[in-house]
Image (cartoon, rainbow, N blue to C red; front, side, top):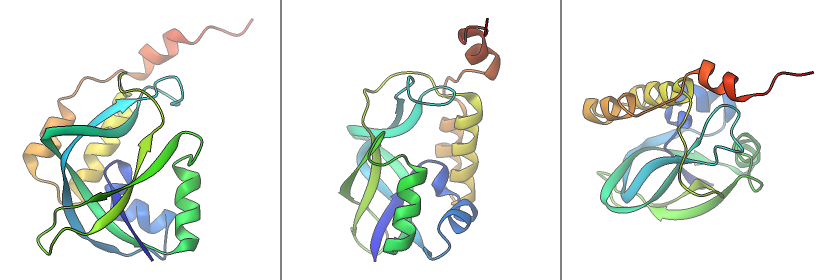
Length: 158
């Protein structure tokens, strides 16, 4: 059984229960020295995708899950591993210690604006996972692009 640290929409325990029913949550923690950001705007369905990058002055809130092989394969499909994302192992700071867990990171450069819908889903997931108010408020204050902005960039079919 592997330990997975979710920082995007998989922070939401209900979403993870639906995607990976054999993967119980193990608690919450922080990725110290990492920052939530966005990238891969060219591979996302509507804006940039969530990822993390090293930043010694930042921390990312995570939910930890015990994930068996069966659920890991399902999660890999959801996260487009290994085409769009890769897995790395990091130490997570928790009240019980610093376990090693895997996270997904984009195989793309940082940059780009997420859709407002995607950013809102991450903020709601963080709230469902018990993230502090200042963390979720910062998420909701980030710049994002509305659907109409994305649709304007898509050329009409002729």
